[in-house]
Image (cartoon, rainbow, N blue to C red; front, side):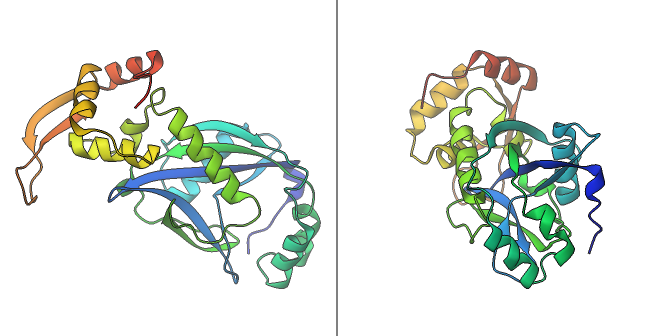
Length: 249
């Protein structure tokens, strides 16, 4: 087990990262399976005294994903007095998830700074577990395993934030592969929003934004007529996001 040098850490401050991916028409989230117990956790960690919080979040995600250029955005601070749970922390010791000498540090009140991250699913080749976890896996946001403490609440707030920021952040740019079809883009929007969108209206609206470039190539290996592949015009997409893509879907 890794050494925990608390002299280097900022007391009572932690980060939790909700890492979203999109695969097979499902919104996924990257979770860590704790050692020896059936509990999962969001990636994150403690904050070193001489490291910026956003840098700490980027470092934590690079350790889990192997990627060093991840879209990351702070979305909320979680500071409820009920966040800490002494019985939970004792259980971590009893189940040998953490050594007993770590208990005083884990048992203090923590305020957690929440970040959400967007990654293209296929870029994360082998998610890497941390010092108190035995697995790191993608899970569907609609079929979550049991999560520790308030991590399900943190994930829910991140998902709601994603819905609200769908038209003002480069979400499609970061979650889709470089080339995609209009139906795949629509599926991403529907999955995040949790509702169906009219096919013709979606196509007309998204094409009116001037953010897509047709490659004149088609998706291969499909049963029906092969759809055209598109790419984002990154400069136009980012500019359009700043202005706001749509009043609603």
